[in-house]
Image (cartoon, rainbow, N blue to C red; front, side):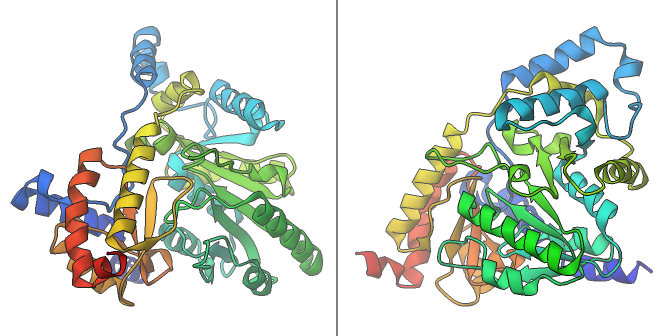
Length: 401
C-alpha cells in the first residue's frame, strides 16, 4: 500500500504531464503533424553548437574516472561554482564567490534543496497565483503549508495588499517566479521594491527571518527590451534558483544552481545545510559532466528569436480569433482567458480540434488556459485555423468580425 501522502499526489498528478502524454497518444493515431500540442514547456530550439563542442572536448581531454566521479563537495566542482559566481558578478554587479553557489539537479532540484534546508513542519510558503503547480508538491515534501495570493487578472503583477495581509509569524519563505510561468509576465522593479519593503517590515514585526526564493529558469527569455530585476540587490534574505533548461535548451540534462549570498541571515549555516540536503535528498551532486559543460558555455544562449516569432504569431492569431490574453514579456507561455468559466471543459472541447491546452486551475488560476509556444513555427501556423473553428463555437469570431 502506497503512502497516504502519495495517494493524494497521484490523484492530483500534473495536468501538464497528463496532457503531454495524451498528445503523444493522439499523435500515434492522427499523425504528429495533425496534433497541436501546447502542453509542455519543452524547448524546441536546439542547444547552442558550443554545448556539443564542450561535451566532445571534455570527453576527449579528461580522465573519464575523474570526469564521471563524485565531486569533492556535494555542492559541486569548485571551479564551476567560481565560474558561475564570476559570471553573475559581471552581469549584475554582485559580489558572489564560489562558496555562494550550490550546483543543483535543475531548478526543481534546487527548490527542493532549499525548501528542505529551510522548512520546519507547519512553516508557510507564500506563492503568487498563477504559479508553477509543482510548488505545491515541493512544499508538501517537507510538510510546509502553501499559502496562495489570489491572481491579479488585470496585469498579473502580484497583489501586494493581499500579500501583506497573509504574512504571519509562520511565514518562512516566499517564492517569486519572473518571467512567470504560466503568464510570461515580468514583475516590474517597482513591484519588487514594494515586495521587499513589505518583507523587511514583517521581519521586524514578527522578529523572524523570511526568505525570498527567486525561481529563475526563464531569466534570459525576455522580449521587447524587458528587464528582469536581480532580486538579491533588493532584499538581503534572497536565495536564487536557476536552471540551464531554457537558456541552453538542456531540460533533460537537469543542471542548475542555487545562489545563497553572504547577506542571507546565517548564510554559512544555510550554505552548509543546502550542501547536506543535496546529499540526503539523493541527488548526491549535480551531474558532473553537465557542470563542466555549463562552465565552458557560461556566456552562451539559445537564439530566442525563434520563440519571439512564435510569440508574435500565436498572440496575434488568437487575438484575431477573438480570444483574450495579455502579451507575454518573457518565457514561452501565453495565458489565455477561457471563453467559459469552466476552463477544463474548454480544454476538453479544444481537444476535439487536436489542440492541447493546460487548464489554469493547475496554476491556481481557474478560468484561463496556458499555451506553451516553444514548438515548431509550423505548429503555430497550422493550429490557427483550428483555433478559429474553436472560437466559432463560442461566437468569439463574431465579436471581432
